[in-house]
Image (cartoon, rainbow, N blue to C red; front, side, top):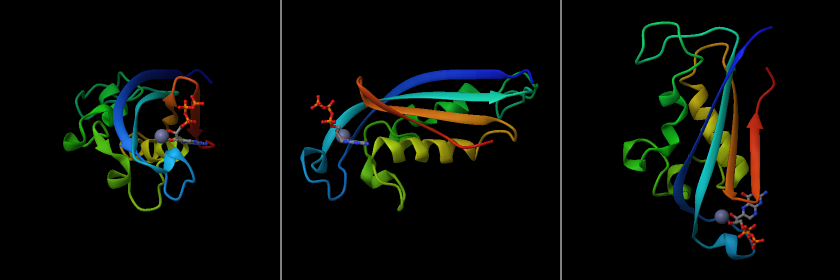
Length: 130
Ligand SMILES: Nc1nc2c(c(=O)[nH]1)N=C([C@H](O)[C@H](O)COP(=O)(O)OP(=O)(O)OP(=O)(O)O)CN2
Ligand SMILES: [Zn+2]
């Protein structure tokens, strides 16, 4: 089936520590996180900002995490304070958190993949089976 795949990429700066980690990652430190998002759909949709069915999903819906924490994003926060109970601040769980929160605002039928990297050398991808 034909489909569109929308891709976008952004960074945010945040501090974190991994609870009970035996080593430096257990102490508060910071990263410039790089996030890549891919949203795919076989049809186009309207958005909160555009009434016409012309987009897979609005880029603004995908890029919320780059906003300042005081405006609902993750930029310049301590992730341990911002992420809800049940999510640890590993790249794996940050990717799932961004995935879960973004999915709440996506039109039905849009599939999502979220990639998070803490450093240029390491990254994780999260997606769910259709
Ligand atoms: N599977 C995961 N392993 C680790 C994660 C993670 O999110 N998922 N996170 C960390 C730490 O947050 C840490 O900041 C990463 O540190 P490190 O691996 O040391 O990264 P560097 O690029 O600085 O590594 P060097 O090899 O020292 O250059 C740890 N593990
Ligand atoms: Zn870290």
